[in-house]
Amino acid sequence: MPLTTAKKVILEILRVSDGEWLGKVKLHKAFYFAHLYYANEHPGFLTDWPIAKLPHGPGIHEEEALIRGMMDEGLLEIELVHEGPYPEYRYRLTEKGRQEGSGIPDDARLAIEQAALYCKDRTAAELSFLTHQRSRSWKEGEMGEILNIYIDTIPDEEYQRRQQKLRGLSKNLADIFGGAPDEKRG
Image (cartoon, rainbow, N blue to C red; front, side):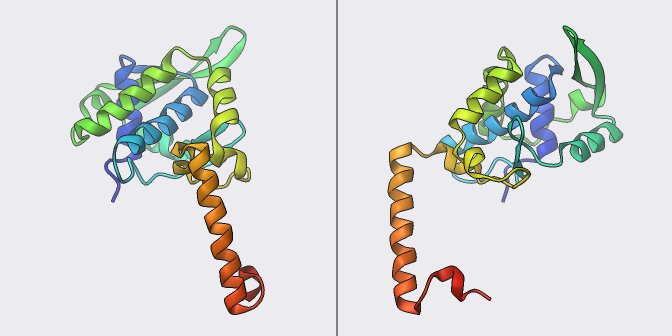
């Protein structure tokens, strides 16, 4: 069972930044990193909202529907601004959004705060570059695919050991049932 909702995570990200967040890509990264920070310290999931492979790295699946719903509920506002010559979105909490925060346990709040502070002073390009280099799930996924981001928290050596073990199990299954496991599905 998820610990909290995607809406509450986004509201908390904005709260950490005094009610305002500049940048769509940065919001996606803070959301993704909050899940990783939480997973590194606790069993279970921060939310059950999917994270997908997007061009700029792991991001909030169907983010527009989620954000539009939050706007319709009066929790936040979005303003189109310019960062230099480039258009960018600024997300702002409404008064109702500022008050919608109960129900987030302290351990979840800490993970969200760590993620927001990690992203706040970095550029979208820096965060995208980082996830393109370090996110195993993003590198292995197909564009638009829902990612298993939790493989991003496993050290490389451990991940390789697990992959090798899975290959061995797959071979054993093929030997038992004759042929490759994928060939037997139907």
